[in-house]
Length: 153
Image (cartoon, rainbow, N blue to C red; front, side):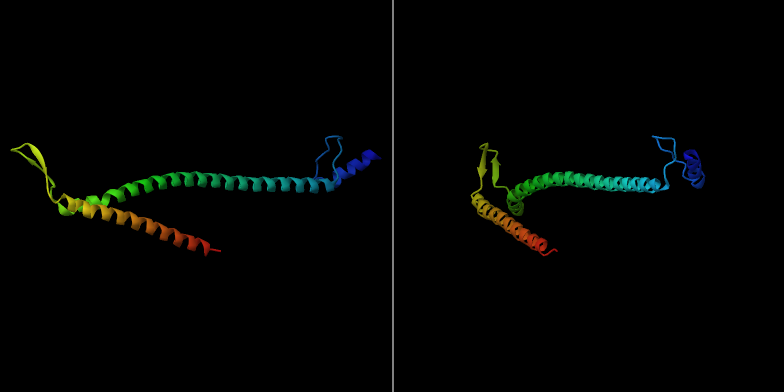
């Protein structure tokens, strides 16, 4: 009788020829749905895990770019400070376009112009003014960026 029932299940469900590993009997049709549901859920979980890993890797790449960008920003800031320190004095010396030091061929000595003080009177305050303007501008810029960020939803 058991053998006959087995044959009926096989013939009735010809498309379901999966047999149990424990016994050589076909599994009941309800098991297929549970197995397929579990397999589909596993595939769905793997897809979500893959998307999560992709997002994590993208975040790590962005972090690396941001760290490099931060280091570049520090280098550019140092270059800017050095440039702002020497730029006004360079401008003043170019503006005057004259030599404050002359070499006298007869005495073989260097002679300094009596007007050298004008260079320092103009260059030092202009350098201080440039640095102060840069600091003031940086403060305003950070306040504007801070307000723009705080206004975002």
